[in-house]
Image (cartoon, rainbow, N blue to C red; front, side):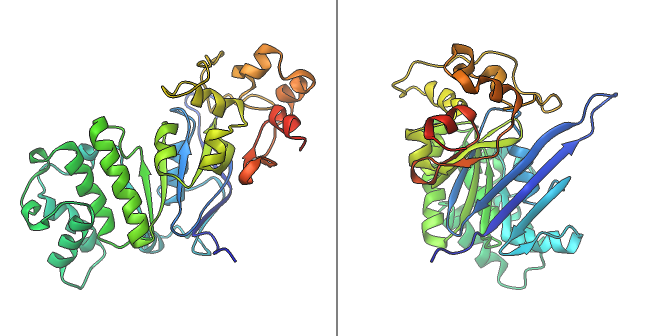
Length: 328
């Protein structure tokens, strides 16, 4: 019998007011997502699709307009005390380690900050050393008195990860954790996240625009477009047999793709102007080529939830894919 999810979002909406009379922006628009114990889920999509807003709402940093977030079976509460307690168990790792670290603080102070905020009563020095060692900075004492400018980009990211680990969380949300790093260092940080999952049983949500990164690290992948999850499932299924045209387009531009690159037509997504029907239809290569056939009108007028029906538990929100699979 499988264990229940560690984190669950149901019907999550985050809407921001429009400026100067503009329509409100539906940044997250009805998302269901779960993350299991010890599972790494990659949240993938273009810039502006709502990935970061979704991630922050899962951590309680952005309060949802509607819908629920539950952690370990309990709904997330938004009082300051409840959020403080929650953030011991769920930690954020940001994209740019230089921006995450105070240049006036030593490595020791950066990692110890969380312990001090939460009133840690144990051996602070030992806890900081253990976190740095787990993050791959060894011997940890050699880094205690260093400042961020004295470290490489990869070392700074390891310090940020150590700052998250020192509170012994059960979940890490990593927003583009290797985007600012050289290619040679990215693999080391990804390997570190995998090792932490295996050794500590950590769960992780990795937010990225890079499907290649998802392939290397994730157990499951959720593809997001204009505020909604449009395809989800085990990484092997979604990335080897993608069913949504948007996922196919994202994969086609990877250097190792056997398919010719798909050039998406139409305007980039705008969360204040969500179209009727499938929200991808204005840029969809299946619709533009006529391949959508008799479901073209449905694509333009009828929205779809994520539907099951693919191999390996895949789900997809697409009229064309549903027709191809004989579901929906």
